[in-house]
Image (cartoon, rainbow, N blue to C red; front, top):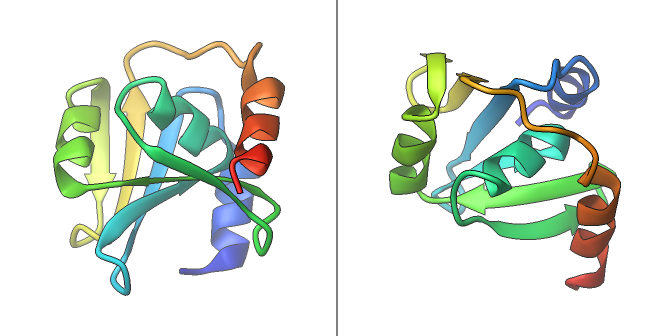
Length: 107
């Protein structure tokens, strides 16, 4: 996974986008930052805090990605290794800071 691209995608996140990356080493999809927050509001995810990326992370299985896709108006993918999902409705960011902090406590 390209760390610079992931960081830029989350800095530019418009509040209605989930970026998912397939991690071949663990066989799970990974979302970071705002994307992780949005995904956690729609499907069951495993959350943690990535000290390497300095942001929350959410892990999910392929069936969870299928469920996420049902909550989108459109999606783009690159051979199932990357998904760009545009949500039907914006998810308010009011709770993001508290949620992000809670991922640090889950260690």
